[in-house]
Each structure stands twice: as structure tokens, then as C-alpha cells.
Image (cartoon, rainbow, N blue to C red):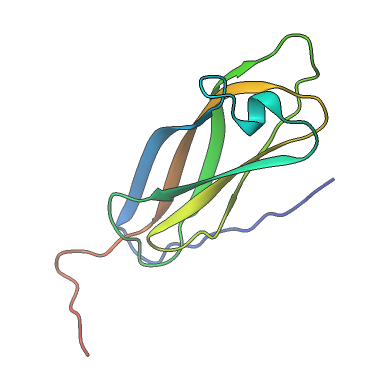
Length: 122
């Protein structure tokens, strides 16, 4: 069991919540690798927030739509990487004979944001 947990402690009463939805790929339209390939395959999608967090936020990603071939096993792994104050990457992986036409993911980022009343002292 993978137990990679961490509590994010927020020091401010200003919490930002950003969210969105993105089509990660649509490979059936152009014969892309997720639809025609075999073996280990990976798709990376870079997401930029609508603002900047004070520190890297907590990010959650979910598959909100998938269109898969019914004649092959359905294998999918979705995760995040490179989480920064400005954005992050969604990583979608599959393997074996799985054929995936398209996938859409939704995401939510929660973290501290700067107040208009905060001072920038250099």
C-alpha cells in the first residue's frame, strides 16, 4: 500500500481554491499513441493556475471522462508532479494492450494566497 500522506498547515486566513477541467488527449481522432500503441505509454499535461499561491498548494486530480476500447483491458494511472506555486503537471499512464481514445481530468488546488494588504519588503 502506498501511504504518501502529508498535512499542509495554512498560516493565514486567506486560502485560495483554484480548479479546472482539461482534455489530456484525444488520440482516436489522429491515430495517436494512446489509441494505437502498445506497452507503457505516458501523457504529460502542464496546468497553470489562475493566480499564484504563496507556497506549492495541495493538488487533487481525478478522471472525469474516459473513452476506452471495450475489447482490451482498462488500465490507467493518473498522478501529479512538479507542483509549484504557479502550476503543476498531470501524468496519465497506461500499459499493455489498453486502447484509450480520450481522457478528461478535473483538478483542484488549495493553498495559501497573498492578501492585497500584505507588504512586499525587499
